[in-house]
View 1: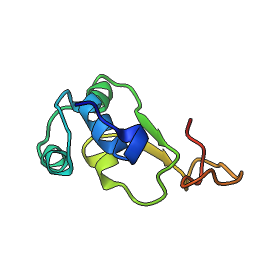
View 2: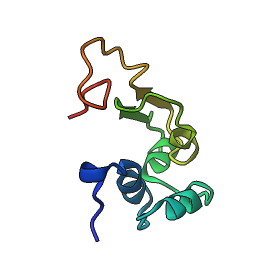
View 3: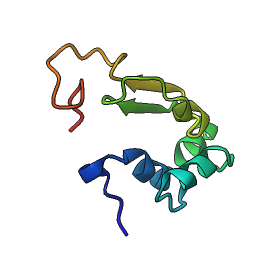
Length: 96
């Protein structure tokens, strides 16, 4: 079964599947992954010396998993990306 993030939300499931290489198809598996210490792509890039950034313009509240699970250096979200234009539907910032 494919992730239906573009139809019903759930992008965190698709993102975590790509990042971890593990099939994350529900909230329970996501929660297991966030507490597993599994190596993610972003964390691997960080260990190799790269500065890592997640751009998540539709996110407008704290997302501790962004730093915890992915080990990202910088998280640019709807509050910090500098966008000052109109909202687009549910999102405060266009992300497409």
